[in-house]
Length: 414
Ligand code: UDP
Image (tube, rainbow, N blue to C red; front, side, top):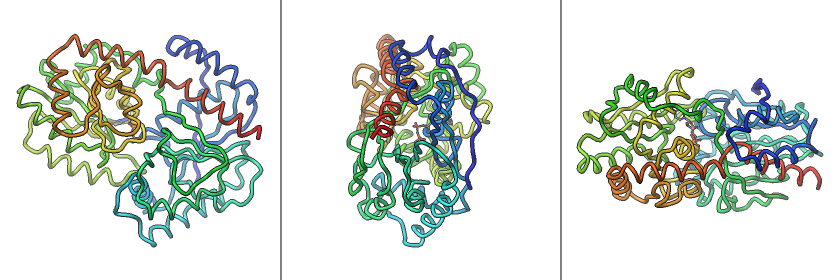
């Protein structure tokens, strides 16, 4: 069931032209004592979604620093990701819960996974999110530390689900969350850290693109470059509220009649629910000729396609109602665009309200923010610059490795 991802190292010096020098110097120092150590990431999937997006370059940079980071993903039997998406939703507060039968499947797949993971040697293992988390409970005593790294918003979980899930975590030696308020009730690991996610400035998705190229790419997807454009880039997921985005666009269009909306999204193998949500979005968009659904770029076109939509947009939206972090917010700010984002979770870390975009609580306030921003190009430009600089300081890859290494050094020393 385990699949090892082969990732080439990247030299830290490649980041010299794009990330703050003091972070890179610190990273070199922090990496020194861990050189030659064998670390392991375990996560659900190697592509699609924010976790995979972040782990790929993290592994490459660890390796470039001389730390033997490996990354194993899982290829579970049918039905497993349906169950883990339910667990994910419930841990984020969905009251639907998870049935006994579903827990049985979750447990038995994790038991099998534990059987395979037992033979993988590592000085420290970091398991991401709920999908493979329960494997630790079936591995037995271990000298080397195991850390649970959760990317979800656990601030108000469905309690019955959290209560059933927490015992699977009891043997972890530490936990990492994206925000302070995400600590899981009922789970008290030895050590905890709060580490916010990051984007990779060297990804093609985050490299500069001029407006002409962006216009060419979005035109091929039916966008009229002479009309204003707002975009949300997201998995088709209920928490990303794509239908709410259409409602906000509809309301904003009353003031800006030629306003176009692009919903750029993908369906992801560890999120089978996304196909169903895509259908709902199609229904909500039916007959609305200025709404463009751009689903599933071919892999080779994805990153530059996403970048093109950021660059060609006047305003980027991320109207989530729950959001562990939301890499798309930092990506859009890094591209120099103001962002209108849901006033929830990790989005609040990234948007400086009124300075690089607006935090909104409803369809109405999202529409108001869009209209306000669309009225003033100079404000949009200024906000895009503020957002770009903020991301540079706080949300680029080298900072994540600094935080993770500092935490791991403490765990390995204790
Ligand atoms: N993404 C993409 N293509 C798409 C839609 C999304 O590459 O069609 C990427 C997006 O650019 C971001 C990631 O998927 O890097 C989504 O991460 P985020 O943290 O925003 O959300 P998640 O899906 O992890 O909840």
